[in-house]
Image (cartoon, rainbow, N blue to C red; front, side):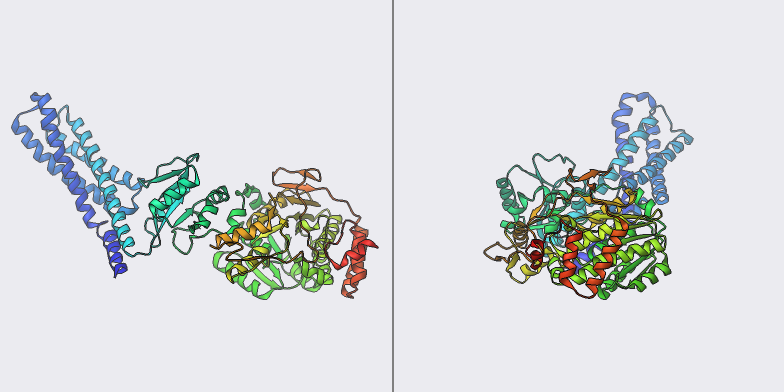
Length: 638
């Protein structure tokens, strides 16, 4: 019933108050302005200048003035259609519209007074007073109507009993915009803004209260006094700013932590796109500044092939490339269902994108040849790989066939068909590898970087773990928490570097625009994250207490796993680039003929599944490959 009444109220307010009635009220306000001017004339002008005319003159002036101003205002309001503006959506453009209407009406009034012989030396002052007064009343009327609409709507929403009382963190531009969009929300009642006393944000807040705090005790008092049940963040940077103070306090006290979408992403904010804060929001970093013009120039109008297209990195590369105006996007992957899902997503989000999904395996030379021969890609992003360390320790031959042999076959086809650039996605585990997966990626780097070809540029990018990738630790922890635990961590001291998937892909494309060929780019991964801390933070964000509601169990290091990952952007082992988060790695150079020989050897050994001989040969080629927590450690002692 309440919802029905609210809909009727919105319909009546928007449709009727905004058209016929607004026109009548605008004309009435102009008439009131004209009456007030008459009082002004009799109390100020005639008292100070009695010689301006007789009583009969002023009576005639009054009638001509009232009739003229009313008719001219009605005419101009009709011509400029100012009454058709929906009141609650009034803007400065609309203010300018009826300002012009009043100005034109005032000009007509002056002309009529002159033609009827009613002009005298103070007429210009009367016209100015009328213009200013009429504009003031029209603007005031609209402001009052907006406030009345918002208050009535708020009361309808409050009667529903389901609104969550929330504070918006910060008072910056995005926070103000968020508050404006939430005024008509069916789910949230914005009590005010919450901001640190040391915050640099100081903006007008549309009469919404601003609650300032200096300590957590201040926050506790504000939340209790205002009966607040949630805090909404409008900016990702604010989430990370409060990751050690406000967010732990809120999770401990069962205060909902929410994050709003970007102002550019959604026209309206509702329960579907204001979501709970996730651990990814806490681990992310400020948005990277990249040269979008250079990136668009590099890839616009090109035929681009992405291998491993339906994986975490590959699919995000496809999304970003779709925005760059590529001529054709060729998706290559052997995973049928993820490819189907990606196809549906691209068809929905990028209706003008020319793309083709191809099911195929980088191990299949003939299938690769078909793709290169048919679509003639100009740029290739090679993201296809096996990445799970323990699984590859158990299946080393498949790791070699996909990560090394597959990469070689893609690179060879790039040369054969004259591709302009191949960008290979590598990993931080290729640095001083301790497992099969990392070593196969290092071997792929060696082969690709050894190629001498003037036409095709070969670029390699290394980075660490990406947040939320398929099969990674965060989705795994989330599943364990949802099932009631326990959450399994391999070791209390294990740490990893993390980067968001979009951030990694932007850096990949930025590096591609920098390269002159045969470079290995490494990314600044930020600070390492302790996995135990990550697990505890995820449990807290889910509203549970670690060790009490959800247990944490240490399962021990898995095969090939190490406690600490290598620092990729160490200045002693890298050279700087124009981008402060991208550096070029110092690597040993290999001869192309030597690289071809050892790749051939490893292909034979892997296809024949001669695991001991294959792993021994890998350790000979990459002497820094020292197995850790693995059955292959025995080969390091021989």
